[in-house]
Image 1 (cartoon, helix red, strand yellow):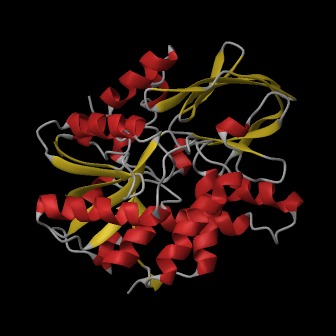
Image 2: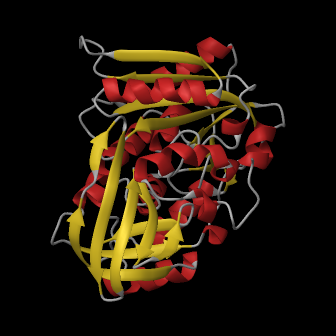
Length: 363
């Protein structure tokens, strides 16, 4: 039996999920995610269930957004996520038994669960943000023979710029279509993909990802004294502070569906250089690499609020926290060597050697 979620759960999921976004989103944009949660709870109940409650062959739908999280020129409404979900259902001819999010906070999946009257899985493609669909593909990036359907929606229905796309193919093919759609739509599209079986999700997904985000959110609520939030967060996650200090440069720009560049921070612990590809992907201290995706590299304010990459302006203060990948719930997608090629080419620095060394990878 699952748990019916409340507005408190939604607020915790947003708060924790924004921190897990690794700089992709910040607390200042929380209202957008909160609005989705409120919409979901106002239009029906949202039941959180374990993957163990599904049968192996039950179809599972994924609801997410595709694009650069810092871009907000796209006009997205909660119903866009429902329309994308219905497009996948129509294309596959399968009714989903449950819906999962790509990563926390994943409030679009709450909206879809409420609208379709299906449970929300306590499972995600990853328990932390990932910059590409391939890294969130739970290993499908290395299986080009496996077909999948992806759909995207953006723009107001009465607007001439309204965009709706459905693509069928393997994960890499359809992901390129989704990325192009996001650039055409102003930076972000509401998206859905499927169907996957519950057995596949259990084997390759990040079980417990939603409840993990809610537990983090509860640790850093507004009613928790600010001086206790960071210590509690570090204790729970097994994280550490890499540096606290002032942003001295930020070259991150939007191009071809991604935000990418570098941020330099003059911290008490020394100069830090953060490599950005939608999220913080790596941190260097001098000539040494000290953290690399899928480690969680989170940028926070001194009050432990999530700080988005686009908010890290020159002169602003930031706390950089690392949570080692071994302490996170992750899906198989982060072990796909091929999923890192475009990121390494865009940033001009190696990522995969560090990302894949801790655990096994798919060649």
